[in-house]
Image (cartoon, rainbow, N blue to C red; front, top):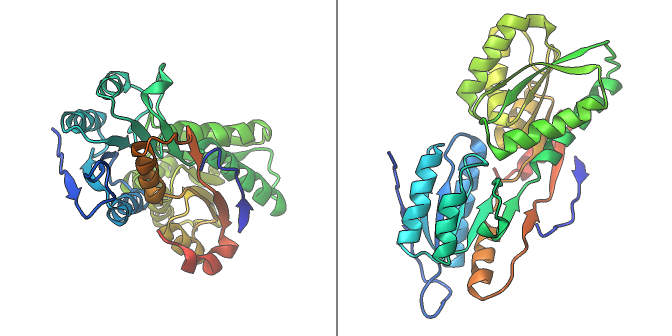
Length: 325
């Protein structure tokens, strides 16, 4: 594994609210209540993220009120307002998009309820509307994917005048989609023979990744040298499309994606994926600790960046038993 160590600069609405109530660490004799709005359940990564938060809340003795936004911003806004009305102690959420949050976050601030962002950031003029953002540096993930690709193609002696790349973007307007694209393109700017010829959102889902890749193959066919997918689920869907088109994934088309879920390792071990860049979903324990610290009157870091790595196919079999998601 190529390891990149980072200093922790720290490190209608289906409001199916799930309350995990257990004997909790006392806060004035009462358990801490955390309201969490999850973006959805679009991928293996998100499922693992949800499980991490639920299990960590139970372990920490925190009452968790959980809402699945089903990938709709309006659902998250309704959930946050519901948490405010219920007077929870802390609100946390993984934003569907970067913009459109200031009114509801102003409401949380007025109610004196601290807000923690997990996994994704928001674009707000008043940064006091949230106390911390914890999760990955998406731009660095895009940079790592680009750097791995350039290094791989050079080592393979693939020095075509133009290396044609198709890109499966994440959900339009989401922080990871914006930042991963920016980081990847930053590397390409230094290597002008690498060129993105098609780019379209696959909404971070396997089904949409397959559908968009089918369209790419119809228009570009064997002209495609590389697929860059903003997450593993879209890459796995694209692999199905490539095979159905009679081509060999990871051989006829080099594939690099982001997340490092078990499904990606299985694809690499099957010779169908070349590389995955890690984005850890296991944010539950640090979120619960942050909630406890806030309730104890402690300051928490403004930004927590997760320590992550890069996994090329040659290390997949060795690393697979260590994967927790």
